[in-house]
Length: 246
Image (cartoon, rainbow, N blue to C red; front, side, top):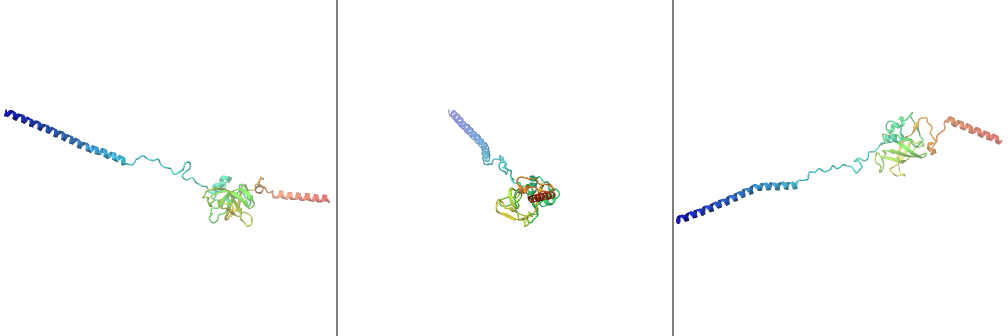
């Protein structure tokens, strides 16, 4: 009986030992799995955090330095020589100061303004290349309106084309060898006197001007022989009338 009790007690102890060993083994396996999963979770969390903190890499569209329909440099400008050529069609080479000499023998020149003629400025201080301007209207024997380019003034940028600018004859002999030009947009103020050569006409040397509405600028002068003949004829008619009255 004692031996049987001893066997039963031994069996109980053995079962308890096995159960505890199994529990310890299960706990150990669970711990190992937890340790394996922790680095993986940490790595996932680090990647997510890095993704949130990183700046977006999407390229932004490049901004062009211009407004809608207007290029970045919207003002190009033009100088007086190419402008005068384009307006009149005159084929005169050289800088503005050389136009007077280069036109000799090709285009008619004079000291009287005509519509469409070119006013030739000499080279002078502050304007070494000279200047040329196109006469758009003759207002009188000592005032014309011009269209020209590249003449700076208050509120006027270099290279700008200006139209209807007043120019007055400032010469002592009334021969347009010195002029004063309207300043900026003011029609009452004129700048200093500039030396000029005269007017280059858009017609061949020796040609006769045609009559037009503006008698001052377009009335043709009769050739000297024809004028002399007309004067002789007028005198003869007067003599005939005087004789008839007697």
